[in-house]
Length: 428
Image (tube, one colour):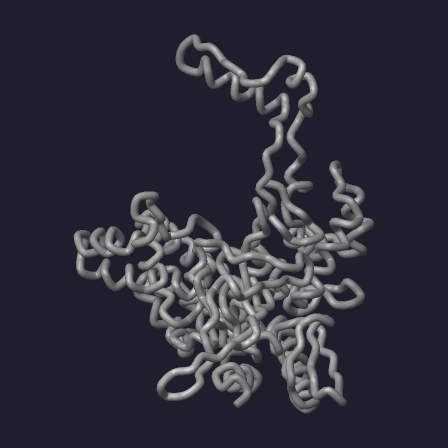
């Protein structure tokens, strides 16, 4: 697996191993007794192999590393990273800085924002950290913990070759009408918690009936505990680490069952990972009751990202067979390139989730249009844009105050209340 820094894209490609890897694998043949190593390539090909695999710093996203370097050393990231033993190219650093600007971890002068200072303290990927922080602010912590835990490990969903259709049906059942892979994970996990209360047998039956991996679910539970401790360390929740302290989190879960809010928090964390949905032109059919719009089939719906153009939903997504999306935007947490560029784990996101947590806002007064990052367009009066900018500024001020006073409960502020009202009603 390689990583395209400019597009933020994981690429699954066939590549030759290094000589060092080949020698290490040869050693396995004689580990417990004398053995033979057979290689399916020639000595000539072996001589052409690279001596070592590329260092990890050249194979993964550097957003988190850049944020850590900025927090500890300061100064321009281009200058600092060029002093590393294996320095990334300037283009890669520019792409990481651009990504950190997009999520508001750095400002235009490449200085750390209040949000960036908190993210630098969190030992998780930058988007996951931002998602967890906003899960606390908007009081939907439990589902966000579940989503974060699922993203850090293996998917809890199983897909046996001989029962793939049944497994897909179970996953669609968990998603319900949410059109969200992330909400399907939340529903499956919460169901497992309920089944476990009835004993081991009920737990196993639940996992078998719904094609779920118990081991993955257990690992997700352990990851949730780690994330709670991390959030407690930076002052965003009260958590003692004991089972009887779960009631301390009740106030941070007031909106945990509001799907619109949870989706918006996922968007807050993973923007600019946005897919624009393009539906086909409406067609109408005649029925006994009159003319009605014909529902498009899933293969008539096209999907686009800003950097890749047309992309495709992965067959494992609950949205793969959807023919109509009420919102024209999806947020995704994984994008891979194999035969095509596939979007995995995506969620239909409400308009105000994008407007409040998206990128730079521009206004076209005559057209009554708001544009995010010169790409995403929304029809709305100019006063909405002013409101969006004001709320964003207030959130930054709130995080600044939180840094000065770690004991401050910002989830109870008027800003958080205003955010909630906009997200719950979607501006209506």
